[in-house]
Length: 171
Ligand code: S3P
Image 1: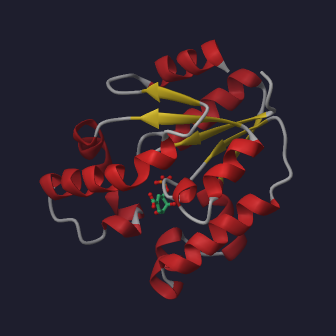
Image 2: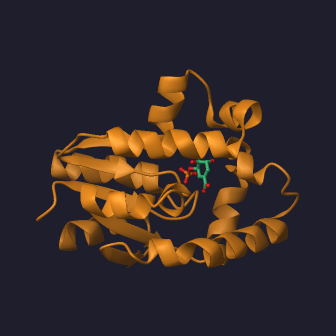
């Protein structure tokens, strides 16, 4: 592997955090979850940060964290919006080998429905159909950024161990 960090990007709920942990174990790398790091540094949940300070503030925290990172041998799990704001995708590509975990809104919506409470961007979603529509819209807005990753991995209908096996095959 040419780059010394592996960075997972993609829509919320695709499994970046859990896959990052499994991959880090397999590589004997450290793991960094940008959402968890922000929550720890701010002493607040992502929901609280959005509610108290707004999304722009959260995006600034994400961008600042990214620019301050001086790490190697780490698998980084990013928040779904991180690549999209403040030219962050360029920084991510410099920091490590970026992998876009690509999933369809149809496959993601069922899985994300049960985890929606932790995501402030989903607070007004009332049913799975609405969630699927929101994810389709988000994908249209974000995919240009995601597709500039070093590698695109289709994770539709794959178990996390299979995804980690795939990752081990090309990083
Ligand atoms: C967001 C994704 C979340 C979190 C925040 C915003 C997004 O992270 O950063 O709720 O804009 O897609 P996950 O991708 O880990 O859910």
